[in-house]
Image (cartoon, rainbow, N blue to C red; front, side, top):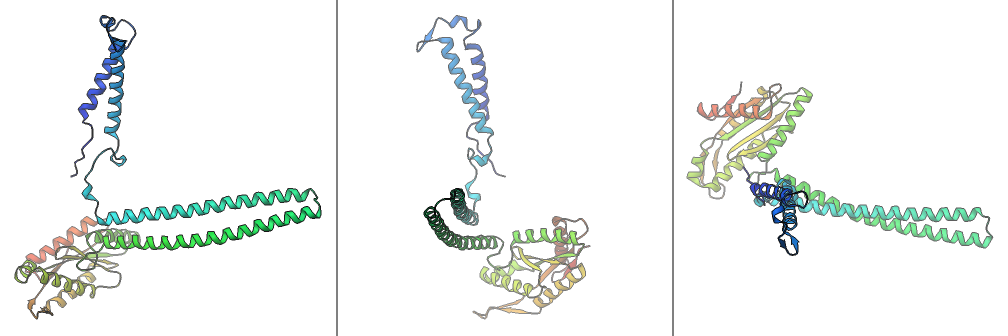
Length: 350
């Protein structure tokens, strides 16, 4: 939970308001209030008037304090935790700022062109008025010359505008690619290069909406490497990372086009299978399990024998009206049921 520090405590705001209004009521000139103090002066002012002004100022300060206290954090009057913004957010914000600046340039170019068009239209209207007055041949030649000059200026302005717009288009395309790259990086697991948990959540949410809207099936597979801690303890984390990458590649090579493999966390992975019922998802999970358990792993660089590595899997098919939390929970329960039943097997949720 994030705790936010207000610049002015609530009790200070309320006290300022209360003292200010009560003092202003008691001491401002008028009526018989404060009569005993009327003969005393401060800075040339009667005591009642001086205290009245002071009380009014205090009340105003209290109002300002209340306004600051209740202003939303987005206006910058309240401090929050600056560590929440990571490098990805900074990159996106910086790119978005550059994109806004470039779009501002484009708007400026368009506004300038509109102004030029209005000037050209005014010149044409003036020429039309002068021609309607049946001028002499010399006057006609002058008018035509002016129109030719205006037309030449318009052509130059058009060419310049096209060049500027093309340059801005190239900059905007580059910034758009940077934003897409930053978005992709934010959805990618750095070790395995497949989707991360955020990618899984976003993709699953969209897949559930599609399945509900098209009345098609949807299944997910949760897979977890067996005894992975023992691999890390015996061979070290670098070897463990290589095992995770091998398992990832095996899954990616075993699913269908359009399926999504994501690292759910640690050595646990999830696979989203659109238009796939539970029986077909079970077959895919069994195929992955069989491929992995059939291999005895060896480190290429050191020829170190890792031995047999297995994984357990839980499968769940989306139920009617079910949300992401429901299908994830059922698949995860099936996975841990497979773990409890001896590992290296596939369990389908009921």
